[in-house]
Amino acid sequence: MTVALLPVHGMFCPDCVSRLRAALQKVPGVQRVVIDLGGRSCSPVLVALDPDGSRQSVAAAVHDAGFTTTNLTNESRS
Image 1 (tube, helix red, strand yellow):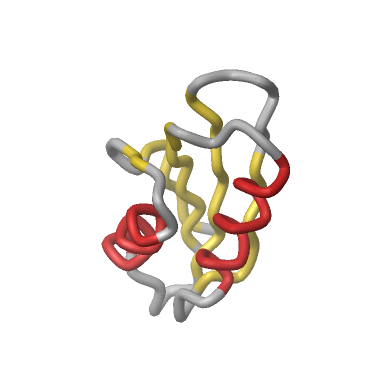
Image 2 (image 1 turned 90 degrees about the vertical axis):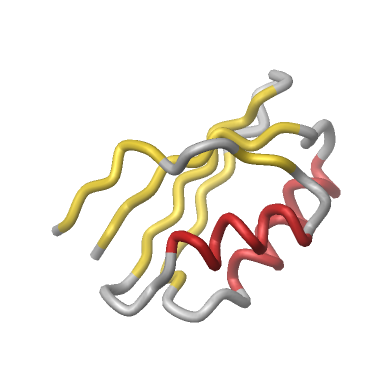
């Protein structure tokens, strides 16, 4: 499993979190999504992907949901 940490910009409320979670859960290979809104302008989003999951698809889903992200970081395999 790959775990990726995405810094996501533009989430300010629980509805934003719900919208992003729903979008990410539709991405093939996404096993788990953890979002920490925390009142910051940049919210950390942790995504667990199975081996067939695509980091590019995750980034595209973030964008399609109306948010921005930079590099996927802290990637590890277990």
